[in-house]
Amino acid sequence: MQAEPRKSLVGEEYEVEIGPVAHGGHCIARTSEGQVLFVRHALPGERVVARVTEGEEGARFLRADAVTVLEASKDRIDAPCPFAGPGRCGGCDWQHAKPGAQRRLKGEVVAEQLQRLAGLTPEEVGWDGTVMPAEGDKVPAGQVPSWRTRVQYAVTADGRAGLRRHRSHEVEPIDHCLIAAEGVSELGVEKRDWTGMDSVEAIAATGSQDRQVVLTPKPGARLPLVELDRPVSVLRIDERNGQVHRVHGRPFVRERADGRTYRVGNGGFWQVHPKAADTLVTAVMQGLLPRKGDMALDLYCGVGLFAGALADRVGEQGAVLGIESGKRAVEDARHNLADFPRVRIEQGKVESVLPRTGITEVDLVVLDPPRAGAGRRTVAHLSSLGARRIAYVACDPAALARDLAYFRDGGYKVRTLRVFDLFPMTHHVECVAILEPAEKGR
Image (cartoon, rainbow, N blue to C red; front, side, top):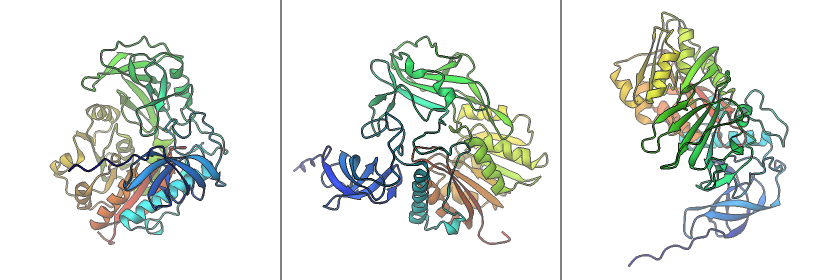
């Protein structure tokens, strides 16, 4: 006999006391029956009415929104954004928290992930628990730093630009995104009709006046004539195969970091906070302390940000090998670093290309893997190369913690950890861990 379907609990409301923050932009609570709730729009210590948004009877946990605050935290403020709140835009997680509280909550998440997944305390990784704001992001409570240089808008059926609601394909139409950088807001994407488009990405480069719009049309739709509030280049994503095509203007934007200009083509990856690239390069180079003549690896190298910084510091007698899977990013990296004859960029997945290089020994390693992390196999290979120091740049504390445990198995310990709030109002953080051999003389 087929089991009867479980009863959906969506819409049910529970009066609960909010417990600790959890990874992902929510806090943990329990119903009177002991069922776990992951509650958004709440803060630790509050008493709220939580309305279930996902889940059914007997599920391991339910997702919910705090729809009424009965006892508020001292860290709570009125959300500055008119589009934030239960059932609204899902782009921000902490609009209702003071800036200092946001950073404290993020620090608690990083510490919890390190302890739970790697058995490491902040003291063991040389971290005082501080989450550092980016330069210029120290704003009073109730104000929002405008930092996001790349915003991907979804489009409603009637052509209005908006942002996705949390864990939903539904679109929240907006007339302005508070966290969008000034260069994005200047484009006026929210003001015009985008009928026929599935999404519109707006890019405002850092360190140049380049602006770009990347259009993804619905199947069979014709591209609109793009007339925005200032000149832009326009790209189109082919809905059949995902390839990016130039409509007009440059197919790339010029970004600037560490005293160099980087070409980033076809809407490719670059850090979205205008201070992020320089902040991360500084943290990585201060941790690695490159020497003239060093041999270094830059894994998941993108358009060559860290490879360029390394090449500049190891000099003509040193060498840098970058590995990146994206074809266009590799083309850009080779262009960006063409003035360094001792830099080589290889295309392919790190776990496949690195073993084929035949490299058995390096001095320094930088890895900036995707959100899933590097994984046990790649970490084991890196641990065998005897690097003096390794810099791990991580956008996900859970993946970082798992990989740090693998590095420990490979004979490496964390010397220092720095955590940066490069994504204000969201739950995201960026971490830079510097590792060295656990045994001296290695």
